[in-house]
Length: 88
Image 1 (cartoon, rainbow, N blue to C red):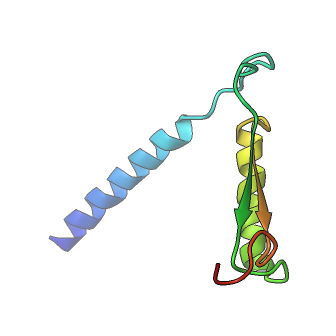
Image 2 (cartoon, rainbow, N blue to C red; image 1 turned 90 degrees about the vertical axis):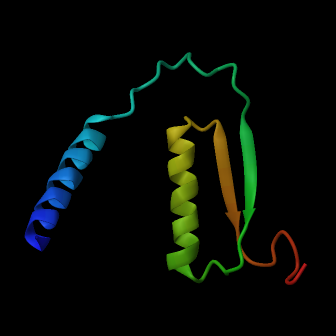
C-alpha cells in the first residue's frame, strides 16, 4: 500500500515539475512596460553586512527582482541600524 502511494506521489511530482519547467517566462520587447512607474524600495534588515549568507540572500533576491522587472522595481537592502536605530 505504501509503495503504491509513493509511486503515485513520484509520478504526480514528476508531471507537475515537467509542467512548471515548460512554463518559461517570455521575453518582452524593449518598448513594453515603458508606461509603468519605476519603484525604488529600501529594505531595512536586522543583520549587518558581515553576515554574508543572510545579507547576501537579500541582495540576491533584490538583484533577481530587478532583473525580472527590467529594472523597474528595485530593492536596496540596508544593514542593521542604517535606516532606523535598533528597537525603533
